[in-house]
Length: 218
Image (cartoon, rainbow, N blue to C red):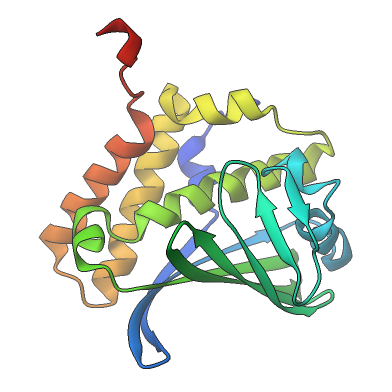
């Protein structure tokens, strides 16, 4: 992954919002990330939905990328494509084991290029939210949106191994710190206790930036 000379500025390209919602009568929390890319809507749509292009900045994906089709990202979530309105919006379920949440992506042309809005809605899980807050999913999306920006700028693929290692580098640590604290501010704006939100952000930073111990060495 190319060296980020100003990781805080790159993290600052994302506008973060947290909302309280409901789905089928059950309470949810929604993490929303918005970033504008200096490319046209058709190019951004293709980067997000072309199965041959997605792995250049995200993960390899298999399955049917059409409404009603089931998809699977390599080593991560799968689900069902619920909506697709080219080149404006798509929505899908985001399933990891028994946990089901929902992701919707909306593209809007503006004077600077195209705004991407990603909304990730999940059922309220108080213990998990208290521990990590919205940064648990939010920082992961921040890293993906950064990789998408690098791909769009160069057309090249982001090296997966470098992408995985990035959060443990000094530049990655700064990026994650700014992103996690940004998600804490968004949660506070939605009504979360400030001290609890800041503490959750610190745990999120540790989660993303501290390499797990090698069990083979113990």
